[in-house]
Image (cartoon, rainbow, N blue to C red):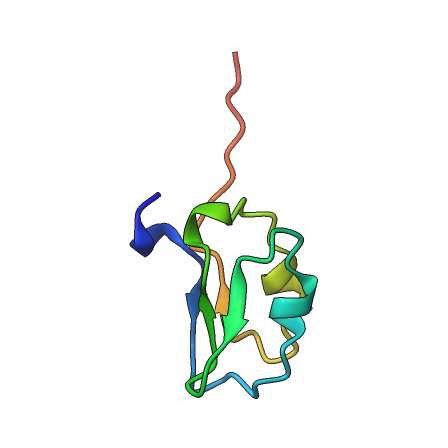
Length: 70
């Protein structure tokens, strides 16, 4: 997994509530002095739990879901 493919964290919007960290089922995030960061980036499954839990929309997954039609 490319580090650029991980959910993006806007530290200016982050209030360090840690909801993204506690909501992550893969335990991929950790808190630092700057804010949340990926301690286990390869564990991220793009479940979007962190994005959904964030009250300030500071973490966003850079992905688009598309459906293939036959």
